[in-house]
Length: 349
Image (cartoon, rainbow, N blue to C red; front, side, top):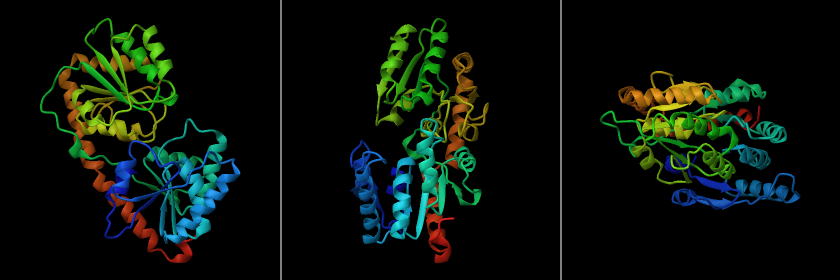
């Protein structure tokens, strides 16, 4: 979404950004291209949230907002009803994950908020299928996959030994980092030179560090935390692993493919749409450390196979997932919605 904000055609769109808390590592990149207004809330059950929603509706009217694009569960729940109250002509929600970590109450709130939207943008076919399971009509769902900036990732020119394995994902339960650690423990005795790097922050850091020690992997696994130099880390890695239990359309895997890395990932959610197993990566069953270790071992044994998978992956991402394609798809959607007769476009189906 940050890149969408930065890349929308300013000759056609005057972009404004609203957020709950005006902070975070990517805030400067957004502020370079758009004015950011804060509507701080501390939970949907608090009376003060209604006042903030009313303030947001006034803000929409004041600035003549023509298209509202919400971008996650919390933004959907807050902004879509408020924008409907403000009479914003085009209101679009978003689904960028499968919500495995959300409560039934949160999902129900979002489902009601979608009633105030003219459509919902899903970032993968898996996310679209989840929306349909939640009762959203297929005609209201628009699939626009995430994009990637290919120029940030240098192409690889030759096969090289697989010694450094990287993963990039928040340290949450659904990302299943423990599966990777157990796979690493299986490989460690046979391949003492293998190193594993884990990029990302999250609530499981202490738990995963403890597991790492229990498995005797302290010298083999590095927890690197949040990093802004992911392209450089991908450039120095030899393989990428994503052992998630649930994924809609993971940026980490797309970026690894763009960097020409062989990717091993769980056969779940949007990864099934992203990776053709055996050609652009390798898919393994979720929660199966033995299968993950076996797939990694095939790359360690055959650097040429690893290089071939990485090269095919880069070609696939370049063809299907550029930022230019993603931004054009959003722009076309916004303009087509604006051109609909008001009696249709201003009504949530």
